[in-house]
Length: 280
Image (tube, rainbow, N blue to C red; front, side):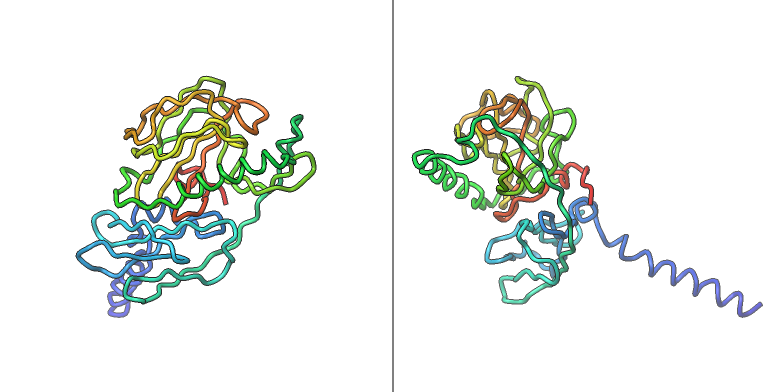
C-alpha cells in the first residue's frame, strides 16, 4: 500500500515533466516553427528587459515576446540553407543553435508560348537586372515596426494552386524554384493585405507584371504579383484586410492567379506557414 501511495505522486510528477516542453511553446512557435529549407525556425532567446538583437548569416532577425512571456527570434530559412546544425548570433557574440531538417520539393513543368519569357534577349536581360535590384533592395529592408499579426489572413479566397518551392521547368528548361504560393482566382478579385504594413515598392516588371511590396515590420515582407490593377501608392500605410490591388495575369503568367511571396530576413519562405496550411 505504501508503495502504491508513493508511486502515484511520482507518476504524476513524471507526466507533468513530460508535458513541460509542449506548455513552454507558445502559439507563435507552434504556428511558425518549421525548420527546413524554405521554412522558418523559432529560437528561444535569453530573458532581458529590452528586445534582444540577433542575426542569421549577418542579417537582422525579427524578435518578439511570445505570449507576453519569453523572447523569441523568428528566422527565415532560404531554400539554399543546408540541413543540419545552424546558429543565430546575439549582439554580445553568443551563438544559439538550431537544427534544419530535410524537405523534398516536387517539380512543375510549364509551357510558355512567349519564348522571350524563357530566354530573354539582351535588352530584356538588362531590364530584368534593373528590376531584380529594385526588388532585392525591397526584400532587404528592415524597419523597427512590430508586425501587427503573424497568423496571416489569406490575401484572396480560393484554392492554393502552385505550392512554394516547386522545381520549375519552363519549356523543358529548369529555372529558379517557385518562390511563393499561388492562389487560383479570377481576374479582378480583390487582393487584401494579410497583415498591416507600408507599401514600399510598386512596379510593372518583366517577369512579375504589376507588383506590390508591403513591409510588415522587422524584415517581414510580402510581395504580390501578376496583378491586373494596383490600388495603393508608394509609401501608403495599408491596414490588415485593406485592398491593395486586383488579381490578373500580367508578366510571366499562363492565366489569372495571385502569386504571393513572403520574405523574412531577406529569405523567401513558404507563405503557407503563416496561414496555417503548411504541409511537410
